[in-house]
Image (cartoon, rainbow, N blue to C red):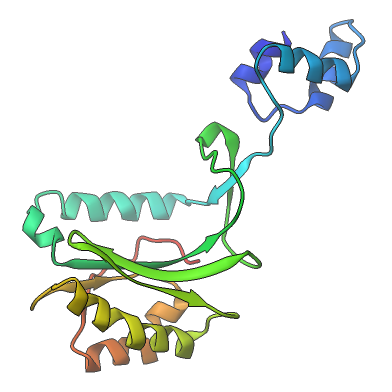
Length: 192
């Protein structure tokens, strides 16, 4: 029963198993549960946190995918993608059955901005402190155009970033417009 339940519902706690067995008429300790799981090659772990996708996010992503389904490989080679990420020192077990959806915010070890295209990776920038719109534009100023040149993106390349408020701020849109940087109209990503 223990193995069946844990394999079907990986987020089951030892305490829940103790209670389930108690209801079934068997008294065991959490230690016994842990030993049983360990003997059968299962170990306890915490569910990983992944971005929360609301129905609107899923629908917008599908719409975007359908709109670009027939885009050629050369169309995608003109896209310079970017995002920020928090690097942590934890194991990366991101199987959906072992995760808990979350919204990103707060803390972390190292925050980085980077970009890439089909032609390779651009510059990587370490973000110190909490990023605001002015800092984001400075990061773009120092890293985006040099990356596009390094990657030999040529004329007609397109920039992609998500709908984080720092990315969609009026001042950021004006900065991109003044630099003649075309942005993919993509409002499908969740804000970080």
